[in-house]
Image (tube, rainbow, N blue to C red; front, side):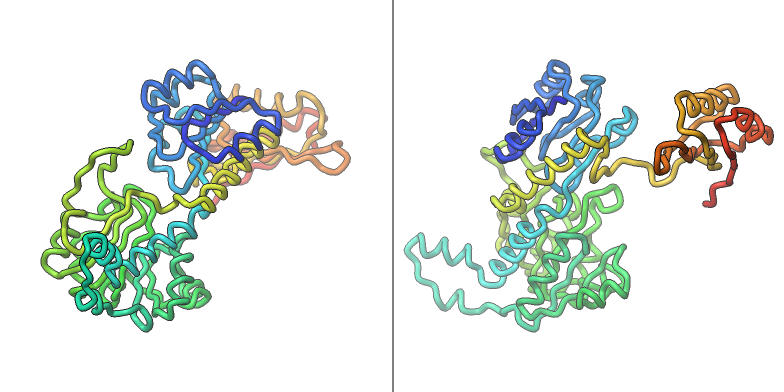
Length: 401
């Protein structure tokens, strides 16, 4: 099996995959047409990327491509629609960079409160400004608002509790029982979180539903002088609304992510980072050695599971619900051609198969096929299939929705 790694990963990943007998091509930095050409030339079964954009032309470059692995959390840099239309699995590594990102979020929180970056700049310029920088509020007893309670959000919650902060959380998936387990207060809406937060931190995945999600309503609810931190994705935040909050309410801001981030290092200007009270880092939340080794290890696990078991661990683009309307259950002898005969009958009746599995019993003498089909089958289907003496029983069950 051929693997193309098109972004930088620790050497441990390449060495582990090669030790497993896989053919690994390590060509970091490939983008756009260069990546299209490499996929066409190398015909890899697996493509590994980090932040590189994987668009339709790349996915169409070789029919051999079966799996794309995003070596990190989120998959917003991969065209999931194009991958799904080609039957290409897309997997990612959620949770592997949670601690690193949570640590950076807290670094921004502490910096915004204590103005460490400003004090350092003044010291480097030969200025001792103790009076100016002796006005921090401190974190103990203050309220941290968290939007999103996934792996990173939970890592932030744990660290906030170590700082003895009160934590209020909103997440679509957060239940009252889970909030109690985490030791947090569950809010009914993001605006409710913002109203009570001294510090608001965002940990939401970028989806069509969350693009621009943190906007005027949330910033209007924040208290003057509060702290806002975003280490998720730049497009989750409406930057114009954030800029107004900085200007009108004196909100202090820590950002690791921005709209229209450059793909390469070099000159870059952004109006937000030029504003007083706004502190930035260049999207380095997951960039610790610990996080990168964890990402590399999970990437290897995904690829080895695929190579050895045909299982796409952590796949994000499988259908939650198919058009299947009925389940065809066929208990049969485990012989060559039995299932082929069942599928041939379905083809002749113009019945489309959506999903299927064949479960083999102890001793490999018998098996049970569970076939999800689209459309109500004709009444005689069970009788037709049962004519094969290798088939023990046939049942058709409507799928409840």
